[in-house]
Every structure is written in C-alpha cells, then in structure tokens.
Image (cartoon, rainbow, N blue to C red; front, side):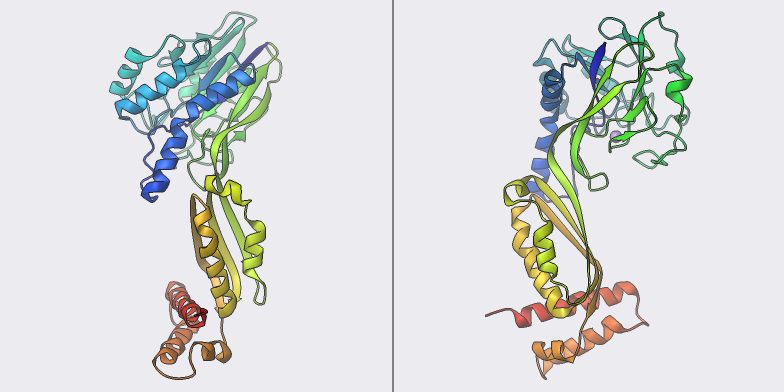
Length: 375
Ligand SMILES: [Mn+2]
C-alpha cells in the first residue's frame, strides 16, 4: 500500500496586487504558511510523501526569501519526502530558480526536473512530466508511457489542461493538451494533475488537487489537498480531500424582489462573526429594489464590511424601482429634487446604455440614502 498527499499550484510569492495593502499582507502570509500545513496534513493522514504537481511558485523569479522559506518549511519534518515538479509558472525555463532550488534543497526534497522516475517507498514509482517552458504547445505527458519494473504502482505527475473536459482551457486560458484518458493510456494507477486551481476529479484515476490556499473567487471556498491511497498495482485509488487553507473565499449571490427585506436576507446568509476575519466575500446582487430597500441594504453592507478580511459588492444587476413618494422623501422641491428627478429620468431612459442607467440609479440611491439618513 502507498499513501501520499497530492497538491499543486501553491503559487508562493503571488503579489495580489489588486487588493488593498493590508489585505494583500494576509493573503501572502496565508500562502507562506501553507507548506507547513501541507506537511502537517501529510503526517496526520499517514502519508509518506507530498507530491507537488507544478506551480509551487507564482513567477519564474521569486525572491530568494520566498524560495528559502519554502525549502526551510519543507526541511522541518526531515522524514517526510517532497517531490516537487516544475509547472507552467515555474517551468524549467526559470533556470535561476531551479538552480537555487537544487543548491539549497534539503535532503528530503526531490526536484523532479526530468522525466526520470522517482521511487516512492516500496513498490511505487512517480513518473514526472515537468513543464519545459510556460507554454509548451504539445503534450508533455507522453513520457508517462515510460516502462517500469513489473508489479509497481505507477503514479503520474503532470501539469496542464485536460482536453474535452470541464476546464476547457488551462487556468491561464491556454489550450487544453493533455488527453483525457492519459492515465489509462499510460497504465497509471493514479495521475496527479496540477494547473486548475479548483479541486476536480477527471475519471477514476485522475484528479486536480487544486490550490491548497485559495487565491481567487473563481474557485472559491477554502483550499485543500488530496490524500491518495493506492492498495497495489491496478487497484482503484482512494482519494480524500483534506482542508489546508486558512482563508475562505465566498461569493454570495442574492436575487432580490421589490418589497423584500434585502438586509435581513444578507444577514441570514453571512458566516458567523468569529469566522469573518478569515473570509473574503463577493456580494453579487441582482433583482429589483425600491430606493428605500436599496439604501437600507447599502447601509447593512457598510455595517458588516469591517467584520471581513475583504468584502466587495456588485450592484450592477440591481434595477431600482422608484416612485414620486420616494423622490418626495429626498425633497419636495428645490435643487436636490431637481437632481433626483434628472437621475430618476436617466435611470429609466431606454435611449441610454445599461451602464449609464446603472450609474444614474446608483447615484439616485446614494442621494436617497443621504437624504433619509437619520440625523
Ligand atoms: Mn497554477
């Protein structure tokens, strides 16, 4: 029997440039810690090795501190082996990176820089298909056909998008090249895939581990790895997800109808206050709301936002319903009312683009919010 932890796409050193600085700091810190959490998960589950199917690093030139701290974290548990393969972000073209890795790697870290098989415990072999360049443009997994001694468990390690399957393209939008039946074709007991940042099974013997620390709302949830157990050659692998991420990325979609209490629906759908500091929230709002309900929901969003590591709201799908009574609440006459009337007309003007109407509606609802705020 062989048991190992399958991971990929750590993207260590990822800069998260589009986030505010304090949020960026926590996102980076969470990635630094993921190596230790993978080691702990491997140990807790009785795995003898961690297989990294590419993209350990986000860029070809991570800082020396990122590389060194990664290797140091891997060195802590000297009895746990790491088999680390280049992906597309940290391909073999990153020659300085892999030289640095080769110079500083502790004894328990194996760098799978060639297709040479790596022995894994007794009776199992890892066959790597390392990325030579960022976009190889051909199927690198043909090398997984390589012959092995009879009676060993064959584990493939590859990075890229699988053809004719859900992902369609690679994580970065490059064409899919890996054949969907690679494991069967190459007689693999398990194919450990990297590239896609969400966890996904492709057939009985092929999985994407996904990133162990989520890095966008695209995949969401908390990052995880896969604990893989293979009883022997030909046996179906037993694969169990193991949470390794500390941060949770949640997209919350609320479709609201006029007359509904959006603020109450929002509060009911949010995680408990204690967990919010580890959450990144994307609120995706759609439907029809009165000016009053919209202003109240905006206040509720502003009220809970400081609880979260990060919270962003998309109002573009909300149509605002307003009547004369609403506008009277802003003012019955005068300059403010004139502005309100003009914004109301623009928000409803079919001659304007949807974007221009949304801008007018947002401005009107903000005006309504200010005008009706309790003094
Ligand atoms: Mn990746």
